Amino acid sequence: MSKQSKIIVALDFSTEHDVMELVDRIEPSMCRLKVGKELFTRCGPALVKKLVDKKFDVFLDLKFHDIPNTVAKACSAAADLGVWMINVHALGGEKMMSAARQALSDDNAPLLLAVTWLTSSGQSELDALGIKAEPQEMVSRLAKMAYNSGMSGVVCSAQEASVLRRDFGEEFLLVTPGIRLLDSKQDDQCRVVTPKKAIEDGASYLVIGRPITQAEDPCKVLRTINQDIC
Image (cartoon, rainbow, N blue to C red; front, top):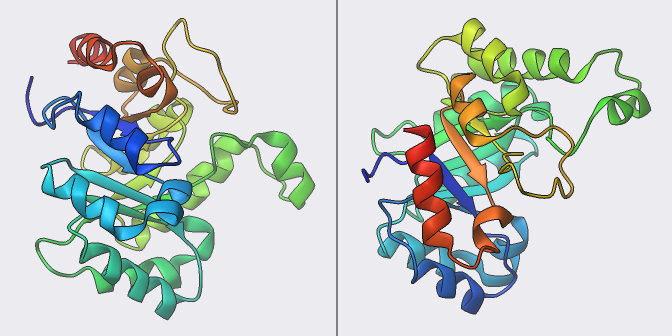
């Protein structure tokens, strides 16, 4: 199994103990790791550095969204942790995304993605905001802004991957949450796709959480998915 695994395991835990219990059972060649808001708020940069020191590629998923200068400085601080990938929210606009991009001009800087429309959100959320668009149209608009701002790619539903791949080419990264195995519960995601289907539709990386982290044998699940999508 190569270092180039397309799986990013979402560490949906609230304690460092639970994180390390999983991490000690897997290898960096099997997956990347995602640290989100809850885990980062509880455990902070120290845990991120521990994961990096264990040679895991870490996606720091904090979805920065603020004035351009603040976001640029936050991205720079995140890069100092040695992470592989960070993200901002495309709803912050092109000026904010461009500032973030400029803050990461070093050749060894992390990949910088923009979040489009959350996979937990659908048409009803757009309607409530008074946005006259369907989710796929909203994703396309935000992805175009991200592309124009020099982002490495976007976080999007796998349901939009084929359209974005067609519109923005092979180099633009598509990181897709909302991935579920055939026997998994849908949980709080409303736009979900299986791993193989997501890759076939153009996804670059798959974010998978509970189907792996709550499995009796996470290594077995990782091996199965990697073999299925290779």
